[in-house]
Image (cartoon, rainbow, N blue to C red; front, side, top):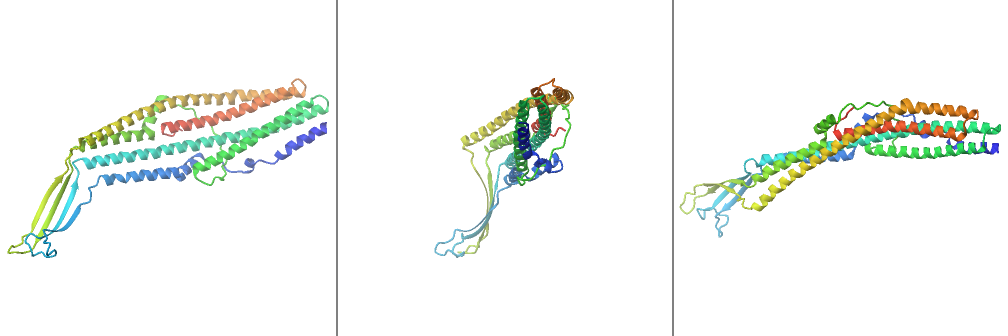
Length: 424
């Protein structure tokens, strides 16, 4: 029976005795700032948003320009029986004229203001998208950190289990241990190998997500994440709200929409006044029928009659509704930001305290407990199940420690996206 157990152990251990892929790849640690810069430079969604902003920005000069002048060439009062004769009748004239449409005073400037503020909304939409992309890169980065740390902890615990198996086999061979202890250890090892497969799959999925954000080949390998220390958040909720009010692109975009609506309202009021068309014509005549054929000219002004009140009243109502809508949207976003800041600060504080607790108290105590359990098992004062339980407890606490560190950084990235400014 002892030899059968040794064979079973070897069969389980041999397939996993080779170094793992992430251990073989000695890639340098990834630089978070470089990853973010790469994403901001390459991401096609950002390029599309930037092109959209440029498109609307180029409309500003268009709407503020005068319409092209109209040049007119014609023959006036021609004689039908002699259509190309200019001496058959003294009133036959060759006419050249020019006309220009002139909007009512202030309309062009207001149209520029409306277009400029509309372009600003797209500009801040681009900046908001940059914030979101930065947050997503940072979150993925720290998820990779936690996954890598979990794999390291798992490998270390598999080696510990291997030592437990050897210890259980030794005790069983001299009649001091139970055969069931060996099976428990082998089962625990298999369970950890199963967890390892899942973590390796998660690591690959995170690499795909990161490469997608950076818009580079999905098979590109992502290096490890360097260790870091947590920086306590010293800013108060009120200070963070002020930072958000000043820096958050979403708020700036809504404020630009409000300005656009107000300018549109003033433009709608101007629509109650007419636009003008100024024209000048020069008429050249030739001597005919005893007439000297003096040249003539014509100068005129035409304008529309703004009598369609319903249409103009609807324009005023539309612009007023736009201002109201944007104002309420601004209040809603501010409320979301304020509640988000309070929630994230609470979560940051919780994670920071957990990191301190695990690092300085719980994990050292769990290590001492495991060491004591190993000693006790050697001298038959502790059963094997207690030994395994102590190892599982230490394993879970170590994972919780790194999970809290990673989650702290991810919550900080969310807070930076919420306030619109890097806080570290």
